[in-house]
Image (cartoon, rainbow, N blue to C red; front, side, top):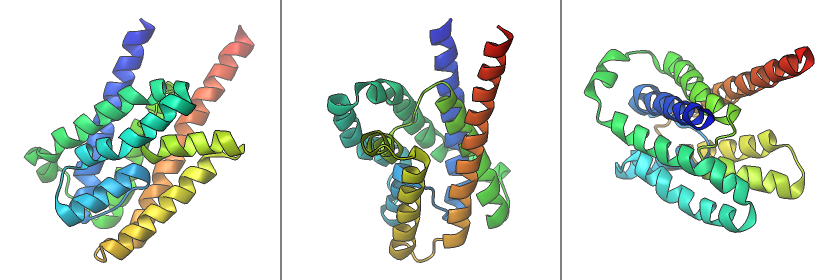
Length: 203
């Protein structure tokens, strides 16, 4: 039952990430942070699939995790594979591009919330989508620093580099997207911990 529940969570989370990327960020050239942000930069420049690029970028990180932090490897592999698949599945969905018609600002906000919910519900089940977030987790563990600060630093660097490589990228809207994703994930994970705490107290 627990395995089924985790599998359903990975599927739903990956589905939301795929919709958020293709329905809200890509139409306006917006960026995300981490490996997904790098994948979007490469997509805007070379027109290659975001999910496939994300998968290739994540492979070296997972190899590192296999040798150094085996639990991170197991907790992130399925999330990464499913997310990569969903992102590329929805990239060819014409109905998604036709249904979702918003301004760049609302796309940044809405896309951030949707991606944040997708990543958040997976993290709530101790599942990561990998990429630079997984690398950030390993670095934070090694240096005994806050994981969120490391991830935020990576995200800012990726968005800044993306703005240089792709000048048409809306820089501040991309930073807003990263911020909204981070806040959404934090709320979901914190809510889950509070629920767990309350259940423990009642027990």
